[in-house]
Every structure is written in structure tokens, then in C-alpha cells.
Image 1 (cartoon, rainbow, N blue to C red):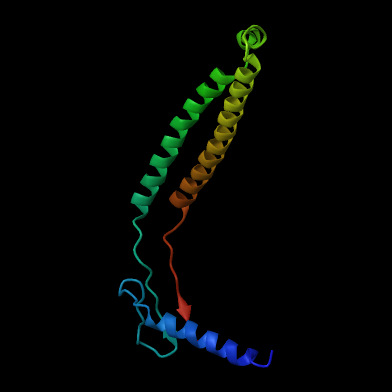
Image 2 (image 1 turned 90 degrees about the horizontal axis):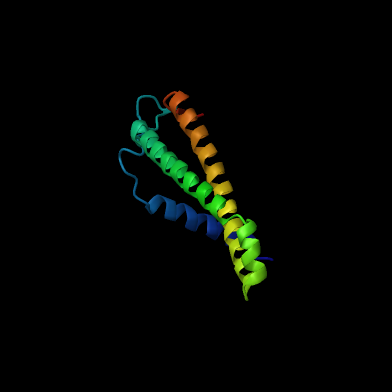
Length: 140
């Protein structure tokens, strides 16, 4: 417990040294020397149109996957024929439990895909309606 302030100081010194040793690309950080009380930071360029297009493609793939899963859920649902197989065939209970497990798995995946589609739809709406980002910092 006596050496705690010394260890804390050493940890802070190591972190500061490591952060100073990392290279910084010119397009990521630019410090303006116009006035000593101002600091200008330029963030890396992000092609918003390409980003929006990528999100649209991911969303359309998820919609296709959702349609496939809806068909799979409909196919895996237990019906009268499955009940008959379960009763008549040896191992019918194993068949029914396996089919029920596949049905539940497909249903859960369908729920996750639906949530992802809603999230991507919200992201697309936000990216298309938001103005271009601007970051400014002022030194005291």
C-alpha cells in the first residue's frame, strides 16, 4: 500500500509514453498554428454514399434471409402428418423432438434477423437525413 502512488505514477508515465510513440497519419490529425488558443482537427474522410450503399446491400441480404427463414419456419412446423409419424414409427418421438428443435432454431433466427433489419432501416434513415459531421475544439 505504501508504493501505490509510485506505481500509479509509473503506470501513467507508461501510458503517456506509449501514446506519444504511436504514429499519427496526416489525414487523421491536423493542428493549425493560426492562433495559439485554437486547435483544428480534421477527421478521416468517410465516403457516406459508399457507406449507405453497403448498409442497403446488407439490409437487402437480410430481407432475403428473412424470406428463406419464413419458409423454413412454415416447413418445420409440426402438423398432422408429423403427429401420425410420431405415433406409428419407432423413434417417432426422436423425429418429433428433432423437428421441433429445428423449428425453434429457425424461429429464433428469424426473430434476430427481423431485429437486424429494423436496426439497419433506422441506421439508413439516420445516415440519409443527418448533415455532414463537423468537429471543432477550442483550447482554453
